[in-house]
Image (cartoon, rainbow, N blue to C red):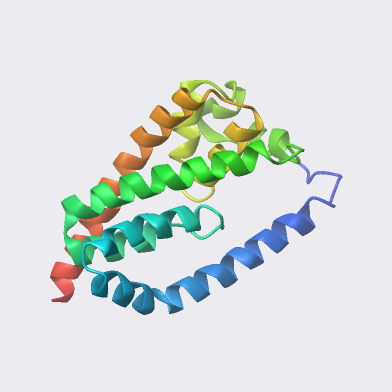
Amino acid sequence: MESAPKNQSGKIPLLFSVLVMIVLIAVFNHEMETVKSIILQAGLWGLVISILVYALLGLTLVPSEPLTIMIGGMFGPLIATLIAWIGNTLAGVVEYYLGKNIRSAASFEEQRKNLPLGLGKLPVDSPLFLLGARALPGFGPKFVSVVAGLYNVPMLRYLWTTAAVTLIGAVIFAFGGFGIAQVVK
């Protein structure tokens, strides 16, 4: 059994981040009906607004899956897949540039050691790392985006790996949202 790390100072920022994420998720979930109403009332511009909401979520720790499920229920799975794919790829670019502007990798190397499936042993700019770590539930996408920016992963490699994984996630959540909307009707 591994012992806890001796340096406990890293726990405070982590706990603070988790607390902020919980508050943002609660606020976002509370405001989902307002977001839904704005998107529906905007007509075709609602699709553009949806994509911009994804980009804004890229600036936060709030996951985009609830938005994708909602859009799947509103517009159907194919349109929702397209919106989520474009929106999450755009959010990934926002996160990438956030990472480029961070001056320190902080505790990334420690977190990286704990990644499953041997991902922590791969170089950050490896397509396998970019695809595999982005697919991990929870922190995966935002974590990979920021770290890719920190390590100056070539933009073209970053974009294709981001687009590939976000397409798969978009399909899953858009069709899931559409299915949920059909059951609820």
